[in-house]
Length: 482
Image (cartoon, rainbow, N blue to C red; front, side, top):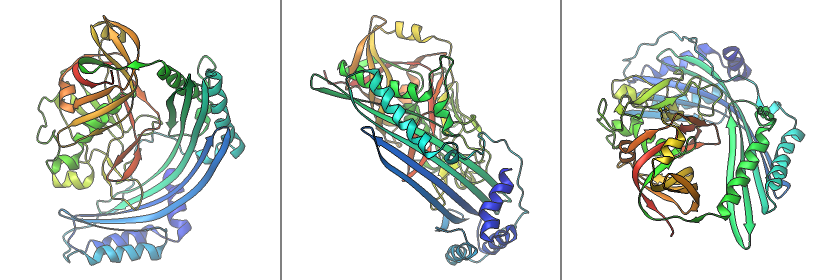
């Protein structure tokens, strides 16, 4: 269904034939190239925003275009056009050809659309509910958040839906299509008590339709209510948080969202472009021990309906389950076709791009640590005095050194193996290799946060997921406010 549907939408409806695509690639291949591809994309997006019980904004956008790339050794020629027409296709083909040397060193293969798994269905989320029902989701967010506690004084929420389809053709014989639905709900709640104000944020998303937010758990609680109450809970919790201590302490990272630290401090350092250029702290460390024996890190584009999942990447390579670190040993870098060609390796299905106007580069999908054998209770009880960080609000990472600074949005003080009280102003300071080698306990409670995660690299934004079980880092520098 995917191939015929997308072919009709992108090619037939715009009077472009597969034979014409083949002709364009054949013509480009008369130049001195190693590879060329064409990326067609149609993307439909809507966004509804609520602030203070009022729908402040509702937008709908259509973005269509073609990107054409040719690679000659380490040089890339790239052009794009914001329309899907035969004229536009030939226009960017001429632009790309003009900067390439004449040659003819590449022989074309026949296009082949290979069978592969799909990790999300093809339903259009924008049509899954009426506009009234979408707006009602936001009103319910406001209601549930305010009902949680009378000290909640402001609620804002953003409901976002995207429906896109892509077609990829390349000189290595790839002809693939994909249909990609995506929805998200982001919530921000402000509370006040005796002049003190705090914020709480939460949300969720899925490669699916808006009906995900209406879905109820076994206790009859909808995802709308669950997300709203969680944002409110964090806001109220922070009203009573005490100042965090500073120093060198054991740190327990909770399951789920704290996996963003692994994503930033480790995952980016394992992307193929950084390692080909020797810019990463992990360069030239394949098959070497870089972490605790307890650590196995996965990048998995195959998880059903997760935000970071990809049936194919943006070069037509099927989404894959990649073991990056196994029992502490570095096994693999994340690769796209360009960097894998230059390093004589294979693409790992991680060539991703924000749109037709961007070049594909190595990017993560759903990145997480596999579970261990300890329980969360055992891990916390093993800490005499330290920090339990449950969630983060952001940070900075230096890819070259692996050094990071992260701020916790929800954290607690541990004393004599017990959680004492919430703390605020917690900053975690260290390096990726440092924390990976100081992990001494790994929990059995792996949780992958299917939230609203967006990864930014070279100005391109793509959806991702992070996750991990509860883990213990023996000691880490904490910048507090006490």
